[in-house]
Length: 459
Image (cartoon, rainbow, N blue to C red; front, side, top):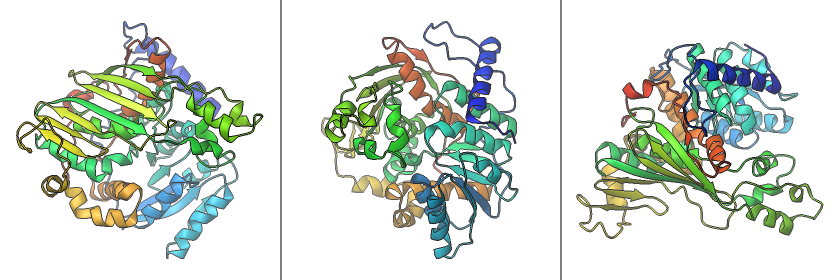
């Protein structure tokens, strides 16, 4: 395993990017300086199937907040064994360990004592997969270190934060032939799974347009100063002006549209509203000399990005974690026969619906009865009982372990994580250039044309 610190990692990624600009395929779009295809180092991992595992031995990196919930849910799954946990904070290490032993599980090996303690854990030979739930800047180096150590990487969203990092992850996955799945849990929500089933059965006709969003007021996280998510996430609002968190809404819409499996993102354009809400909140909630009032918040309160696919479809993606409004992931899919929209759920069809597509049908029980996804039919009650955003977190972990134990390809691969996550840096690039269009890399290097769409799997 290569032991790189973050500075060395970024230097290496930049060098790879420079090489790619020479060896790859440059575009003619002046706003697409980051769009290049580096020379392939390995083989495609589309449809990658790892050898069957009777028991999946799991290591965790990061158990402060999100990762602690992941430890809990993984502990409920038959065939998964939690072997080791790494986190620089002793308190959260011990909390996860105590939860496991209190609930009849073996004492995991604990690795603390600094940001790079996880590398000692990766040297173990009794770990098959690693769950990474750390601040965004660590996702790429930790995922790469994990794959280099011979283990499969499962990374919290986003997969990475720069185009160069995403290519470095893709290259490593192809060279090592290891899975690197970004854990987009929303793809395992009941409603999103049902809509995928509807789409696959042709209910909406030929797909034309999708809309996706992450609208979630999170200003309160600014009060998390030394620890927890707000201690590092707040700074991103002072670093970049674009869609900081596109994948929750975009993941399901991409699966409906077979992105990277028959279609792919082609280019985008993005605009941002003024950035006013964070500064106003800081002025109201903190002393004038507080560090939150020393930041210059530049990320627009509302980001709106339009994506065009190679097959001509359009997708609108929005991000707003600042303004006072109800939560929404939006989740709209429009076809030639009608439309589904979420928050609240509603449907309108020309054929096969209420008979009046000019009005929304809000009564969803009949649709659930007919189109509930087989995974939810089988595991939904257990998923809801074990929790995590209404059960989607548990179902995601259950499905990951099921695929690894049964020799099946995962539902999401490294190309999905890269395509959905790259909207962040590219949206910022577009905003900084008067919303000019920016080409989106083909992380599959053309393999999307012949890739099999995600089917309606059972169990």
